[in-house]
Amino acid sequence: MDVRCPRCGKDFARRVQREGLAEVIASAVYLYPFACQLCAHRFRAWQWGVRYTKQPVDRRRYERLGVNFPMTFSADTGGGNGTTLDLSMGGCAFKTESTPLPGAIVQLQLHVPGLEHPLVVDSAVVRSVRSMYVGTEFLRLRPEEQYRLTQFVASMLTARRIKDDAASQAGRLRETDPVSQMR
Image (cartoon, rainbow, N blue to C red; front, side):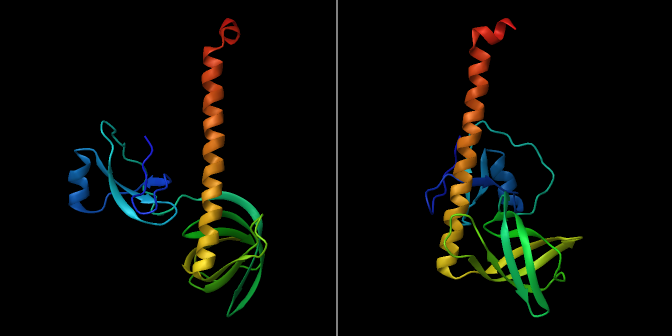
């Protein structure tokens, strides 16, 4: 069952961790918390008959999407080039030879395929650095850049959904194909 965001109307909502006693009690009657992957709106939705099993805690608010495109960054202590490895509405991870320090504030220019100009993140904080891999959280984007990011993430989510639906459909067709059942 697809859950639609009541604010933007899109069905790219992700089930998120319950916060507080009220959400724990509400889940007993199938009312679960969700967050829209595009507009960040947190809301609750009914999921009659659905029980979610406890999963390892993922504190990220947004789902990360695997990507592979060039980027540049700059900070007070310098900058560098790299490759964006994953992206969400809330941040990105990239690989670079010249890693910034954890806690540094950086400006990012993401050279997203299909966009005429780089997507500019005015400020992001470096949350993690492991070897040549850097994880950032976006702090500030201009409204037009936020819109461009939203459009790109929506297109990635849509493409993944189409691919998943096609794979699911192909699996169902194999199950009902009499020739494949004879093998």
